[in-house]
Image 1 (cartoon, one colour):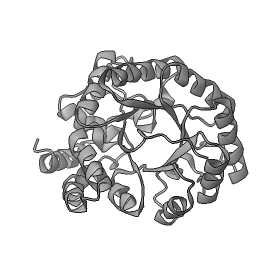
Image 2 (cartoon, one colour):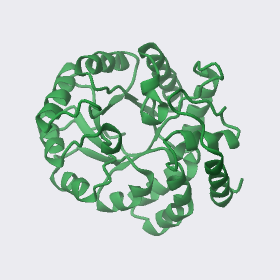
Image 3 (cartoon, helix red, strand yellow):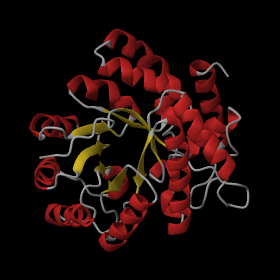
Image 4 (cartoon, helix red, strand yellow):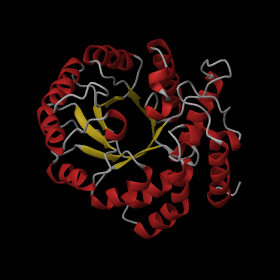
Length: 300
């Protein structure tokens, strides 16, 4: 039976990683951004995911970012789901263990990218990881647009039924039919999170349990409140917020994330607009669009 993780619901934020001009991690800003999330109503921090530019950081840097998130979360009563996945099963096992030792409450493990495993390969990959960290919760992360492979509903259910510590999935497939199959067939206690801000409200209506958000980096209070209203069945209030912030949800993906989000956060005075190659700051025409959306949604 799937482990019951009561705290794993609601709005989680896929944290951006702030960098200094020289490319080093801005520790002070990192801690401030994590604190801002929790004070804005977010209960779960997700460092070192796609939005955190994890693939441009070495292992020691990722572990450092996770430790900072854990420190802030523990002080303010929140939880941490650390991004630990890669396309190398052995490396993922090793880093997931390190994240657990660093105090993370769970791991977010992305589907292997580039090598495009079959569904049997997916099942074996996640199974080996689950067995290596028994008792440590794992959230699958399905994002075919970035990995070039899809964790099917059947494979997700099979993993959930076989391994008690595979407790959730972050679904960013954009395939509502697939997500509905998972929700309909999932074992008791297995959680489904939206991996796309704009899909969150309809997915919660269908039975999803929460969101791992990009948009919450910019507007944690509004995003977490929308999710809270939706989970409580207050869909009138959830819809009002959803349609108000929808332009920003969409604008965050005009160019490759997190570049648009970092521009908006820079304009808000939250960080410096520094990214690691191969990502670069957004183009001038995108800046103009983002400023217009900011004025509409945030009033700045």
